Length: 479
Image (cartoon, rainbow, N blue to C red):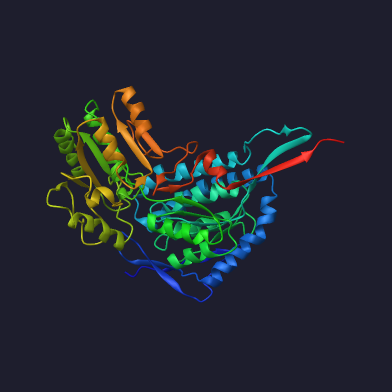
């Protein structure tokens, strides 16, 4: 049987369009390795059109009341729930994610996050008005920044798009968003749904490759560029945006340390670490990929973690027993395999370390021990179902190893000692520190890192404020 190849299209100014020059990109299903769709390879003319539409729509959207924007976002959340099965199907085809897990673990949080920002639209806080100089009253206005150019990643195409458009729209901005070239389907479907609710030009989708994203960031119209992606991509965006002093919001890579002390419950910790390390095939910037275990329990922990890996299953999206699906694309499969192929002689593969099957980009749950702090696999992001294990002798060394990478997005500490947990949460140089858990996120709390993991926050009131600018207004109150 031949798979019917669908044609995905850009969404600009309330209309679905092909690329102006007709160029397309093949979109591959990572489960079957077959082309299931084509999407536009947008060029400069398409970028110009999208930016023009967003700029034209901005004044009217900016001037809507917070209540009006809240109403629109709540309608979008309701519509996403009504079209949940369609979104799940598109996301699974995009990524190969298990259908059941997408239904339970991604759609509900995404809808909740839209509703959170709908509420946030009506609760912008700031300093109270006051007389800070005799005869003069000062007030602070928070305003939308303008058109936002947004680039979403392929690991969570739907949810990361929500993280970007929801706060931007809630604050009164208009949006041009580009999904990854490997995962455009769910974002295009979102445009179809949102197009029934939002005015023309408020939300626009451009499909394309890195050059498309580069053209969006370099375009003179956007006041802000937001990207979730690799450190290299973030550095390029920051450099490009600096040429006309655009505001930049970066959520980049991660190399989360998982610090396990000798008093941790080994069974519970292994269960938590394996779930947080293998979820979404480890394609998560916050994944529990780098375990640091106290030397007194190292061997016991490694044995238990290797067994947990062996018991973890990857496979087809419709299999309810699988913990994760394939890697997203062939290049990612090569990257993950390359890390394992290049392991130093002192490393030991305790579980996995190989591709699964001969079709689809599936990779076995993998555990590697015997590693040193300066090993490549410790210092660089694998972004796959690979958990490394190192041992440490004391708290000081644990902190040194944990902080001894360029990334600083997320971390966790596993201990029953409250004082030690508090010391570690202070010492760990990461934007998030979980204690006796790893990977849960809530809309009310900020998500974002330090160092080469980027800057700016997603989620929470802090993430909302990132899409606003501050204006001081001072007026004389004297006759």
